[in-house]
Length: 348
Image 1: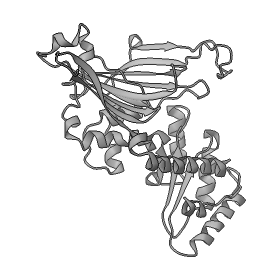
Image 2: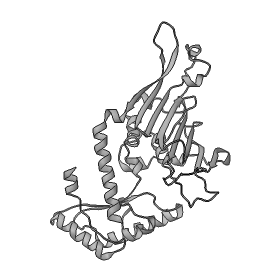
Image 3: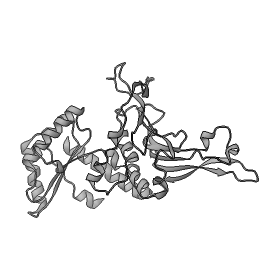
Image 4: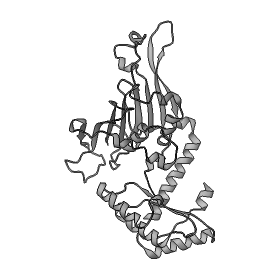
């Protein structure tokens, strides 16, 4: 950490301040000492200031002795039209291969682990289809002080994509699973609004018609996921801030985003059906991927209760990140938070 902080500098400058960007360029040249060096510009700025900052950087702070890259943190525009306009404007200053659009969610441990879990564990990849999975619920619950926003489509992309050719950025981007999502029908969508109680800190700008809750069933029209609903839910004030996803084997699955849940199908001709009880849904296996609170990967299985009788119980096999990777995760999150703070300071 000390080494990281020793290489951190602060320079005050405006969004479109030519003099400030020129001073930034001069300080970087001094640090580089005349050697060939590459530069990465990380922009965490208001959307209204994005083009001014990018244009000023392009004209006054790019290195001529190496390559330049620009990382833009989401959101990237206010809608499809403004996003296209942003892209067109940026391309006039940078090449497309220099521009990286990112979301901090993709840097979280569990989200990074989604493709690892899928493509490096044969036991899961063989089951990852409509043959074994009934539904995939994904839930994002935000506390009352957070601005409503959903990262669900990115999570669904990682969960539902086809096996990758490689981990190269272009190969990942070429997996166009979102194009296979069927058009939403009004009957598949539920909207609602949180009704605050006294003491709740909510956005006072919300009108009586502003939705703060969204739920829908998404269907992916391809051979792998045909007929499997991705049950998404997002909103403020849903019990507590959490996220996870669950997979159940062809039975209902429950997911909350800060994770996902996969519910697997019923066991055909289950010999122990009568030992499970009347609710056979409880006998289905589940894979639960939880981001917050407490990152975890949980697998729900059926297990015999100890004793002379033959009674089954649903148990969980769990991997809790805080128990397994406490020190490593703490360092990772500390650096992540430091970088976010540093970016905010530089761009303000």
